[in-house]
Image 1 (cartoon, rainbow, N blue to C red):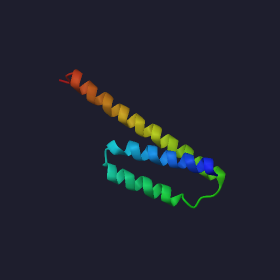
Image 2: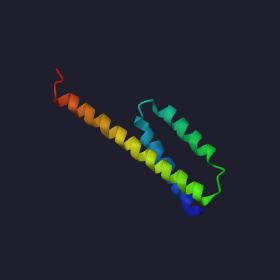
Image 3: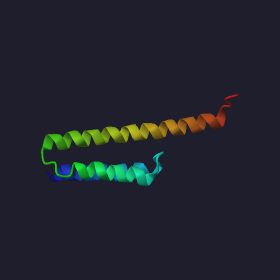
Image 4: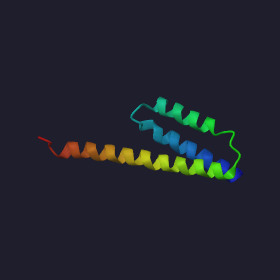
Length: 83
């Protein structure tokens, strides 16, 4: 139980860190993240907790991909004239 708790806390911290540059604004992202974790806070089934942690890891990968795409588009815009 304590290992899953530490994994959940780590996941939450990483999501909060990644939310700083989220396109909709960091406060909106922070609130949505908080609400998602709050809804699951009463869960005690280890399988459901593991599933939720895996979903959170997937969300982190998607956010990182979104940021990479944004960086790529910005770099492409800088170096290649689209006209």
